[in-house]
Length: 438
Image (cartoon, rainbow, N blue to C red; front, side, top):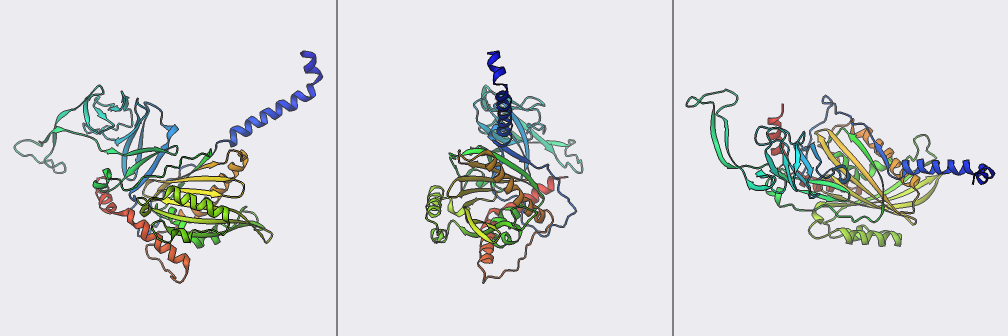
C-alpha cells in the first residue's frame, strides 16, 4: 500500500487539495448567509408625518431552527414585549413577557415546564402557553386564584381610609396569548391592535410547501418607516433609476425591468398578469391558482416583474418574478426562467419605530450550483443596498404629487389605499403604548 501511495503521490496531493477546496466551497455557499450589523436609528433625523408604525398582520420573529425544545426567548417588536418558547411537546407558544405577579420578564430566565408551560424566574409562578392562564403547576393546569391590589393614586401617593393600596380584583388571571404559526421554516406571530381581531384572524400566511432547496438568507437593518419597504414593490419607476446596474463599477452590463402591480381582489387580475411567453404564463397562472383564495385576496397585492440583462446594448430576457405581498410584512417571490426556479421569502419586522429588520431567504432548483444561488442572494443584497441609501435618509411622503395619466402613479396610489387598511386601530393602540414608555 505504501508503495502504491509513493508511486501515485503526484495524484494524492491534487486529489486532497480538490477535496479540501470542495469542502470549503460547500461550507461557504451551500447555505450562504449575509448578515448586516444592526444599525440603531438616529432619533434626530427628520422623518416627516408618518402613519402608525406597527400595521396589523403576521410578522416573522425567527427561524424554526433558532428555537429548540425547552428554549425560551424574549422579543421586543411592534411596541410589544413577548416571550416565545418551545414546549416539551415541540409546539411554539407566545405570551406577554411580563409576569402578572410582580413584572419579571419571563423571557429572561423563565423555564419551560412540562408540555406547554413556562415558569417565572422570580417567584415560580407558572403560565400555560395554550391559554395564557396562571395555573397551579405545570402538572395541574387548574386556574390559580389570586387577589389583586393596586394604588389609589400611584403618582400622588394618596391615602384612602388610611391605605395607599386597595383590593381591585379577586379571581383568575392570565397573560395575553399570541397566535403563532410555524410555516415555511419560520415562526410567525399575529399582531392586531384591536382585541376583537386577536382571536378572529382574517387571513393566514401562505403555506408555500417549498420543494426547492434552501440555499441561504440575508438579514439587513433599515432605518425608516415600515411602509417604505413594501411600497418599493409597487413603485414601478424607481427601478429605472436605482436598479439598472449589475455591477457598481460599469454601465456596460446592467438590468432593465418591466413591472406590474395589481390588487389580488380586482376582477381583471388574471388578464393583467398574462405574460407573452407561454412557459412564464403557465407558471404564473398556476401560481395564482395555487395561493389565491376568495378569503385571502383582500389582503394580497400581486406584482409581476420581468428582468432583462443588457450587455453592450443587447438585451436578453432572464426571468419573471410573480410576487405576493401578503399583509403588511410578508412577501413571497416566485422566479421562473427557462432553466431554473427560485423562490424568495421576504419578511419585514419592526423592532423599533424606525428600526426594521429585513430578511430574504432563497430556495432554488436542486441542480443549480451553490455559487450561483449565493450570487443571486448577493445580487439581491446589492439591490437592497441601493434602496437602503434612500430609505435611511428620507422623510415619509405623506402628501404625494401624482400624475394619474401614468400607469405607474395609478398603481402607486392604488397600493397605498390597499396598505392603509392594515392600520385600522393602530393609532389608538400606539398612543396608549407611548403613554407607558419612558
